[in-house]
Length: 439
Image (cartoon, rainbow, N blue to C red):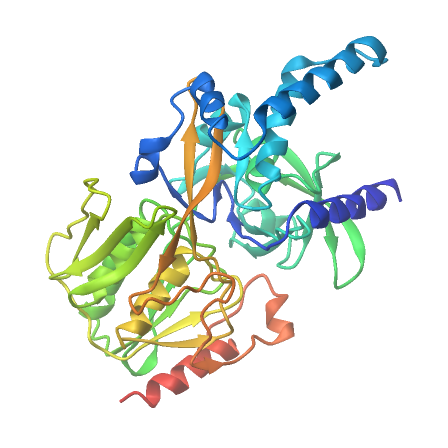
């Protein structure tokens, strides 16, 4: 009973603190993280610099400082227990970021930031092997997918399970990326108990699993009947574009005439990977444009099948040329749902704006904003929203998402299964029907 009370208390706290919903993949944020770009020109070079810029803000810093001093005097004279100054200081900074009312902006202590950087995923890690999302309005952590043969599947974890505790410690209300770094991931061969609430049976289950080295290819592909290729993209990491291009080339060598690209439950990830994939398929033109607070921004575009970038702020951006020019002009359907977010929406939006694909499924999540990670010299860091992005047609999907050309819900029975055969997947079958009409 106590664990249930803590669980629902966490739900209520999360609902009061944040106002939107968001997705995070195991080990990394689902949002687009950009480091070292235009916004970095204004980043704080150290803790003292960050405090100096505060005086230029609209906040009344003098009044706030006086109140902090007053509260500190009260603590010194009256607080019954021993104060941890470092924890109090971190709490002040966390509160400042929380006060923005933006669920994607947050403060990381030195320890938390080190954990995040050391445990960032590049296709391999030691953990439980599950794709997890976090609802930013309730802070509930829901399992979207369990990887075949992974510890999560062996222990009986299912899509839809809500993670409430790890090794007996209540984690409801915590940031998912920190739960993953500090609790779910660990040394290979170590045991971890994950407590989940299963909505279908209204029960709490303690799932015991042994951490393993998890290799998670972000792209899977196979050839279906009638010359239809199928490519599943689960997230956008540093290896995704290369894996995607290799998959398409393999399918082309097998005589692919039509293509299904599955972006369902894809929470996003690295922007450059999504636009590099789009550039590989599309003719010359703008793929996505970002705009910062000052009206300046960056533009990513395809030129001869290669991804290039430019900045209105005069900052030289990286270019990501493919070895050979490439363009794919065949009937394409992209599968999307409410968990297709951020970079996944960039890719899907660009493909549709170029009139190269139709979207099948349900309306996407609607995350059209960019986050930047800004580290301080004292080891702490913040993640803050810095820009909007727009599809080639200028559509701002933030808060709205992309509506599918053909709407079809995945059946409830299939949604609760750990694995679904493509032949049984009603959304995949609808995609095949749509392709048949795109002759």
